[in-house]
Length: 448
Ligand SMILES: *Cc1c(COP(=O)(O)O)cnc(C)c1O
Image (cartoon, rainbow, N blue to C red; front, top):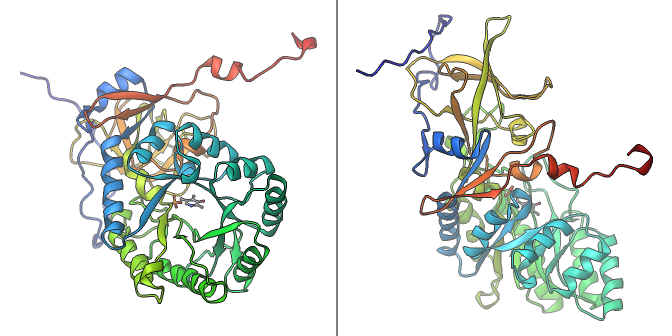
């Protein structure tokens, strides 16, 4: 007979009063495998902590998003937002699915080119493009989204110098009725600045204005905000047709779709509040179709969806290093996942799920990382079944922004693994080691 697994008892205060609508059920199921590959095996083979990406989930999520838009509008193009996750293997999955690249720096631009993306399928956004960046982008016929007047003047100079016509779009910022309003990128719609730059570009005739762009914010929970944004871009689009008799090729509505993660302080879980791709698509494409743009001149709709496409596909696997009872009686865990590996834990209350069977009882716990820093807290208050030293757990929906905003701090960053659609595992970024850093450093002669 197999020995029964011991699980330590938990002590719980009796709460007097009615349970809330969401307070009845705290148990959930362990995550023992990802796409059929056991978590235990993954950790055994590649170590802990470990980032794991599901190629199946990426492709399914992309297909769902693409379908939502392409069934409602004839000309749709996604451009993968590199800064959301620029591990080359991840980018390549999106490119294989048909995505262009959307980049915001010279480094990202270089990555996109090396990933085999043709220059005329790269969209170059962002407030900081150097002269060198712009020259490369112009020579490669990439789409440059102008952020400010100084960039526009720089483009005019370069265009004259190279005797080439840059392909440009104007980034527009605007009030879409949501808070906070992002006004620092691009040209403002309401004060007339966007219309002003559009006219200057067309009158100067030094570059080809091919599109309009906006990116109204991130984790936008209300699809109608996109309709407001689209209406304002359409107003500019029609203004250009009327005054200059010119039809732009595309309208790029940016990224910003929410993911199913739960924001800190949110009353309802993100899984209940996140709009579907269909809802976003409805809001955006209805506005386009119901506008007075002539059917023959309908622009291509470009989407730069980031977190909405990748969050669900990423997992961070970890191990309990120690358990500790705090002076106030609260249970705490010291784990091997620091906030430097999960930068987005500052905004999200991540779901942490044990990777092995557990009983029906949970306990309020604090989950710490391994860093010798007070801010290294993954969850301040979370109901968890008791775990012990050596137990594994899974943090879900971590695919966006963590592999770009991560920080090396006192330890090496771990392996990143992709599970392909045949359930085969591949390292897509190797664990760092002493050499990774030694290579970058130099010792002055007198200190040798
Ligand atoms: C970051 C960014 C995106 C992606 O945003 P998400 O909120 O992750 O969808 C798209 N476009 C631009 C210009 C961005 O800066």
